[in-house]
Length: 116
Image (cartoon, rainbow, N blue to C red; front, side, top):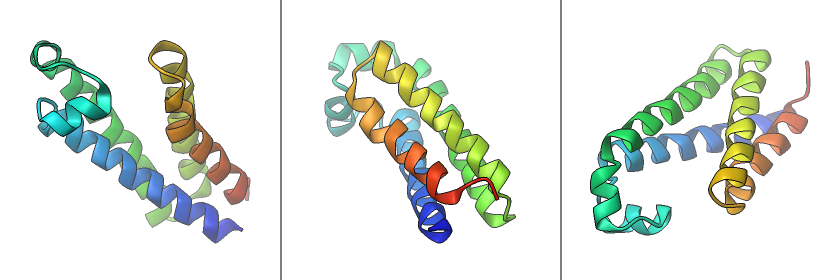
């Protein structure tokens, strides 16, 4: 089960790297706007803010990858908990679907990795 959890954590890191790419480099692209539900005008106005969010998503991915590479379950669990918390906040403040995409996989990975 531990290895399945690490595999899921790796997928979560890849997802957050993709979010970094969308928010930092493709924010005004029509497909990215469709994913985030923004208009052309809104994307242009929020470009800098989105890039900042993308950077934070990169930090989450880097932390998970660092913990896997070390290997250090505590580091992986910490960054997965950060992903889960961000997903809860996003679900409350933006749209509930974020909890399914972000929080649920992080919690499952944390349970599979376990404390040891």
